[in-house]
Length: 364
Image 1 (cartoon, one colour):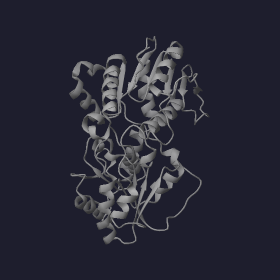
Image 2: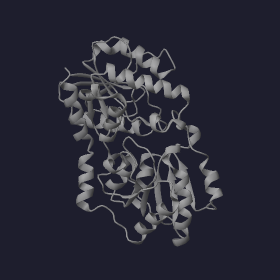
Image 3: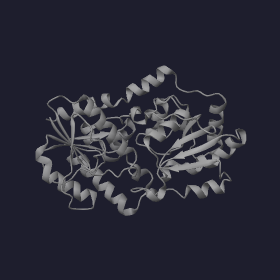
Image 4: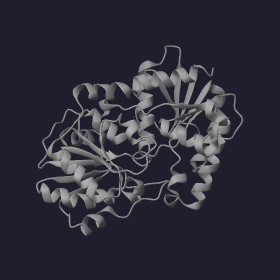
């Protein structure tokens, strides 16, 4: 099978979970591809060029707009592949003999329209509808997203929809360096988008700090000014100052995978107050490290975390969130060794890649 994978949407450290999902999937594909498979990643994702079964190709770049460039690329290279995969909701509207697989990560723009400009909402409405019509298979990260698509678009596309969970690679966090933190901390990993609800977390942490004055809150994730696609949240530094938590809450911005791995390994507790997810990658990563996790019962999060976290009902209730954090710090309930193993096996990139390749082969 000749498989082409588009990475032309990738902006390192900016796109977020969709970018990491692609990295992990390609890792898995490289590990399980058949000897006669020819796998090519085209576009910007050439950061991991030491693969055995995956090659890279940088088509001529003639346009700065991703969607136009992807269309031009499919027109020029589509005939070289049996299947072309588009990981980020857009299926180029050009004639091709290549069978098309596209992932729609979520329909956030329909639920939280205030996070998007009117132009962006109209664009995504068209792009999602076009993908549902044109793609041979539409992959989604969760049953929540599948049901959401069916509720908005009807069941005429039901046969195309396949749930293909995000693969998670804990190996990418490995490092020869090991360190001990200067002080105990609660960890949260999320880019500073509005729907990540970090302001509520910071305000809730006032009560936690009063109970545990030596405890720090560490916020890891790309700062709002560097994000694209969705309106970012208010300046988190201002929220921290308003809460009187300067010196208690630390916002790192974007950091390396090895640095993040160290933070996961040493945290007392992981908290993820998001109000909307098509999947929810960080709490899954945290569970795979054996951390107790406090998160919300919103959208796909209970599904993605396999019911293994402490879920709050109202993501905007600072008292409820603070109480949940204090309860877990007082009497931690981390996943058992067996549950950690189950999480890691369920999201193993090789297992997910095998399912993806089986979907692709059925189209050939």
